[in-house]
Amino acid sequence: MVEPTDSSTEAAGPSGTHPEVAAVNYPLLRGRCPRCHAGAVFAGRVTMNENCPTCGLRFGREPGYFLGAMYFGYALGVVVLGLLLLAAWLLLPSTWELHELLAVALVGMVPFLPLLFRYSRLIWMYWDQAFDPR
Image (tube, rainbow, N blue to C red; front, side, top):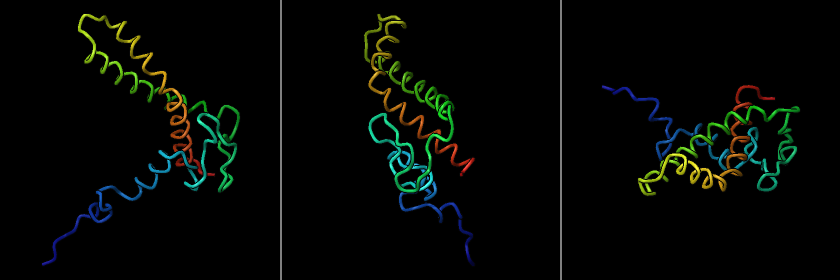
């Protein structure tokens, strides 16, 4: 008697991750092009390339294109600020008020701003490319 196999375990890789998830997330984390996954999106820390050096994809499709990235930036910022606020609440004395803890968390968030900028734009481009490839 042949036992039925679970198709989700067959598609999973050796580490238990699905190849499709790894194929999308790894280039996003490395800041690669959403179309070819090879060309670098950023030329510097916050300076973007106009086009993909590998496939020629224009990153900013139109004026105001990255307005949608603000939604992802807001969501990422809320998560980072919440984690920093939680860390401040756990690590600092209990006599501190909420507004003092929030001030500490906001100051601690400043080094994360370039990362939030980069990844909000990258997530937006990957999101847009998934729904409207050109």
